[in-house]
Image (cartoon, rainbow, N blue to C red; front, side, top):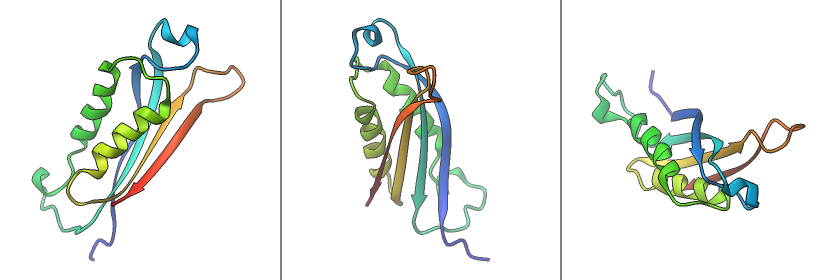
Length: 119
């Protein structure tokens, strides 16, 4: 049976990152949970070869690298960098990046942002 759509997923990768507008957010890194979805075109049988697909290790490594940058004010900045990285990869037609700060409010599970893009 032919595959009509393929999506690579990374869910809630935890990143320690210096992020936030408020003075107390600039003291120490915070947890940021990052999820991505990447849709690929020209889906063929990978024949169990990593070279025939988008290696999710690359996604994980790029997200991890965001924690090594200078302080960021906005989640949108981090999400946009990750989205740009994903959309620049060959075969990617659509990507979604969602970031969540789970430790902001005691009465909310998280605050976050979702960005999507097509190529």
